[in-house]
Image (cartoon, rainbow, N blue to C red):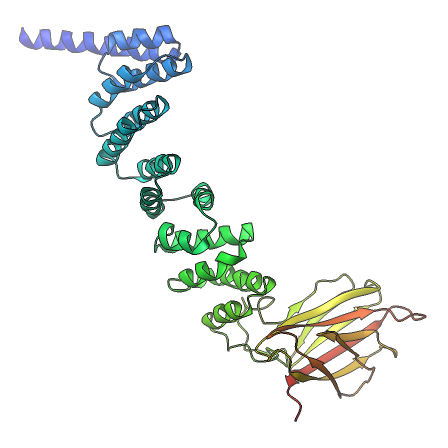
Length: 382
């Protein structure tokens, strides 16, 4: 008999819960209230009713407190209670609810909410504690967190020291953020942080940091990053014969050669002898940059000599192909045999830009043929 009663009670309760669920799925205030009447201990139903109360400008506090009671391990109702208290101006109660939320849930959301709360309150010591804590648990898009840090201060070192944890993926995300926002003053520090924990996958990001540091005139910091990536300290032309060994990821970055991708001009590496060939189809622009390198490790104010060896095939004289460096220029002469050339220049910084460019000479058709280059280097006059 007792077993029959138990079965009947179970069936009745199942039907009641099914009716509650059916009403709840309608999501109207009346149906949600009906679902709660049928299942008054269901926290999800109460949370939805509290949300509906907020939408209609009613006070959801009592409902949320009941949800928190029914869900002692859930941070969500506690966070909502905290935000409601803050809106009412009761910041002490808001803080207590947030601390209670963290006591039951140590995940990202509670830490991030605490950081935002202390930001709004202007309590910066607590802000930095919880921002760093939040980023230690972060995943996915971290841009809002980094943006918030930069709203607090524009001191990149403070952000790095107080907000960015020693976690590889966070450090990499932060460096990428700085590069995308062109915050050059903070890049060197963030790059150094990532260098201490880098993997091979970080090379492209760190070479991009080297580029921005050079663009910002921070040659020493760029050289430090370049060297930390396994390259020799910049001291004149890098790879004067355009030859291997060359780190594949360094090509086109930092203190290495950068080859312009120009319609009508193709680049080819030669092995014997090691050299670089530029082939002109005759359809290239009338003037264009062909290649460049930032030459580092120079003495500002010192006079240098640029040396090169070149040979041409099919190019008429004048070739229209010139070196430019530190306000000095020199044209490469047409010659089917290897011919040496030199030019002097005065370095106006510890790093200068060397550019090889083409410009169609007046009265001539566009160049068609090839130019081979090797032994491009700098020296101090004897």
